Image 1 (cartoon, helix red, strand yellow):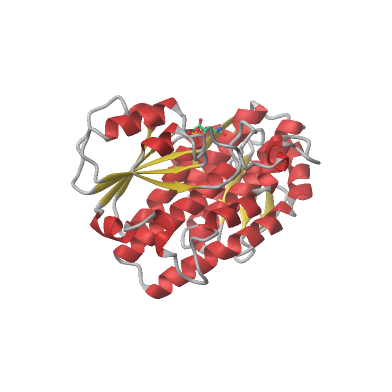
Image 2 (image 1 turned 90 degrees about the vertical axis):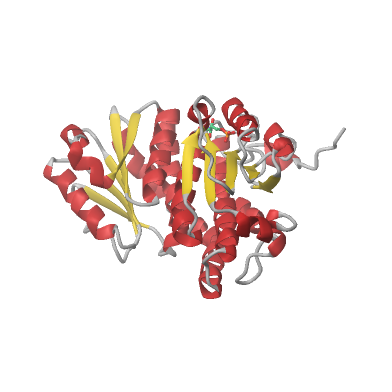
Length: 358
Ligand code: M6R
């Protein structure tokens, strides 16, 4: 018997109309909790991934991530991070596919599962299968300490998001991203990441709760924006780089709770077919952080405008396209490129929520 230490506040709606709204607003505190005790001013603390983690991470040569739904999208973001920050090849697969096919496992591959609940049947089955396949170790990034996934994995990093009661995953996603970036930085330190780079990434992570607070302050504007979506039947989400899985997550949120069909595409794929669908009745949502892909993204947005499409762009003010009748721009705080997926997920959650409410 274990006595729960949860307070009543954690499982009550309080002043919020829905649990989803409450959980969106809990993200700054939840992310701060994920970071608690795992970073100092500008370093990852060695115990973040358990004792002797540095030795294990130094041995690891590849990463295989397996998850479902929103957790899978977090894994897709992490693939960019593992390869660019830690220099480790990384594959990501949905658990319901992974568990039903044959595998060739490269030596010293770390097997990572992501799950809010730790009880998703396909993810658990994939973990059990992986344990027979010769992976170097299994790591679960999970929100429920008593879950099967946590009990059956070699190593665990808890996301500490607190109970997620809304069916649409929100704070579970951004805390998974936080835990994944911590893992990537720790792996990077064991491979190719320099001290200055580590300091830059840790500082960026420590600032993110405050920056998300600023985004939450944009809620009235996003609520107004949501009105443009309620009579639509389809919505397209576009992104490049790490913003592509963020777009996938935005589309999943919208379809899941508003029942409006939503699809995500890598912006560069638009001209290879889906552009044919774009017109004034199909809103196009995208994120434009200030990075080396933003000019390419802007030329994709021109393609949308040429088809009479209506654009809704969440953007860094330094990189934003010009606002116009057919292009609404919502400025977000400037952030380090590495943490942009955390920040840009939040307005998409708010948009999905308000469209659903309306
Ligand atoms: O508990 P898990 O993270 O394993 O759940 C996986 C998915 O069912 C879940 O992320 C689902 O896609 C979200 N609730 C969607 O918002």
